[in-house]
Image (tube, rainbow over all chains, first blue to last red; front, top):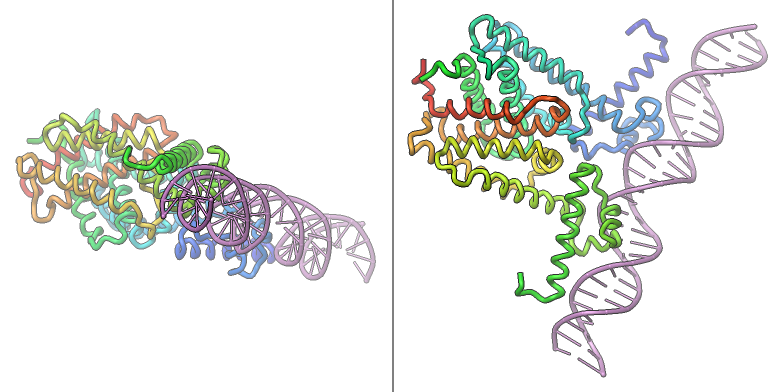
Length: 205
Length: 205
DNA sequence: ATATTTGGTAAACACTGTTTACCAAGTGTA
DNA sequence: TACACTTGGTAAACAGTGTTTACCAAATAT
């Protein structure tokens, strides 16, 4: 940070300023409410000036999205610290995920509800999936989870991701106006799902 | 249909024409690729003419979305016919849902990945949720599913919806380029979930 | 035969993201 | 100190968007 020229630091600060105001604009008015001209107006610049910092509006949005991913990851990581076993990490992490979507629906929408074909944020997605897989495998070797050839670590990971994402997505879009305590409901559902990870496919009933 | 003036029928036909071309434009180029002017060009009209049929672009998109919902419902209904028990209906219906998202990712994105606060299509959503609830309750009274005070019919319904929507959503967006057979994986996961519906929370292991 | 509604057009309006030409201030260097 | 040059910013234009307005011809209704 401090190993840069003053002008480089100023530029970096201005960039952060743009990014932060863009994020707030999205949070308040949705992704559709983000306008380069309005944003330039807020930070007292000319629209053209923003193009010295970002190549395009889409480029700026990508940067905001990356910022949101960092916030989400930090939120989850903070909840998962000093949880020991895999099942607890999955439960607390998943709940944090759902809660974040409930608290910041616009950010969640920005991160995950993007158009097909525009497959951006591949890096963050891969690392998140990798972390998830690590937890699952840890649970398997510790004997907490039971894997079968058909329902292996990958399948369990996808199952985890899908249920959490499904709940969070419904929460952030179609269920926003509902008067249901989704976080409490999520806890019940997630417990059910994680409980099941410790039951072999052909070993029950 | 036939109890209308010729001019009313012509108008209805033109409206369908607009709607159909708008849908195809979205399917091919995404929701962002839908342009009133380009659409007018395709159907050989002037941009202003479309406003005799739809109040606004958003109004047109809502109509396309409603059309997509009908297609999705028909697709699912066709798969669920002559399935008798609740578990089978849930499995086949859920798989049809996932498959539709895989086949028509842009339509799925249009239907479900809309901005928070814009809570449109509430009607179709409510009837879909109602049908789902009916199936669950049928499964409960027939003894296929086990409900508890904590994990009641509503919870089971939300669980079903969330897992199917989660899989379909991942499928339609972030996992499009992956080389995974998501339909096969979905079958395994859905079976797991539905199997669990017949296991009481405190009655196992 | 006359009046009125209807479906369509051309053009303007008010926006949007983006690019261009330009410039002043800051920076590096002989 | 003097000169060349990069940098961050501006104003204005460009191309595109959704939408509205004024107008009109043809179909309909009376």
